[in-house]
Length: 309
Image (cartoon, rainbow, N blue to C red; front, side, top):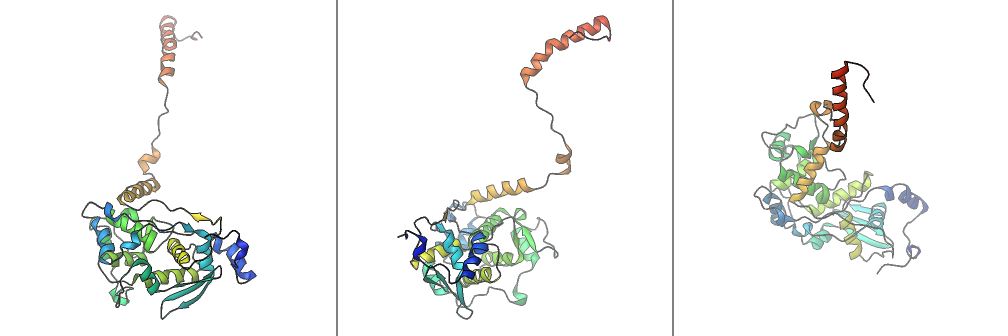
């Protein structure tokens, strides 16, 4: 049950920590996960998405998440006190309650199978080339991914991979901007599409830790952290700030994102240089006809003299 006031729980361990929260952590956007409608992929191309989640036993990662508690997530990132590199575990204190995030905790939360010998992250020469990833994501006839560019625009991708990228950037490796993917995230997408084994709980914990240490501009996995806080019985305020998530990700998402990406494209030279004729209402045209006829008759009778008003 929500607590009546905020004064009943100590949120910060010192004045410095409180200042860090007010000036930095509370101002960063919190990113929440969305439901994925895996049953809404009728064509064979989009069955790739459903296969990724079913074959890996990740079905619960597609389910709807609880309403995101914004300040709980910010306080979690602020108060991360311990990271165990060997065990891949994170400990944080939120309003006097300890939250431990470990592979075992996440496997239990989402019914995930244990992966004993994951082949991802790639090591050295095992990583795919940009050409291999471009051929898969874009197609042989699509734009090339050159050695000088480190990001791949989503509007270059085939529809099924544009949808996969949307899911990755929202739920599996969150970021606020969904117009392109980095080389690092492209590797992750390639792993998902080519059945390479991955320990997803360790991946999540690594992203959370990196977001805390590198002081990134957002707080990812907000829905997951809210769920963990509820499970740990972190006290919630009566007027707890929350964030309602958007609807589910489906094939319709690809259509909408394609429309948005098209709108963001710069106009071509032809469209930029062309002018639009002003619209003249028909009533105004009809009103001008008698005057024009009167003027024409006067000119024919009297030559090019001043026309009557």
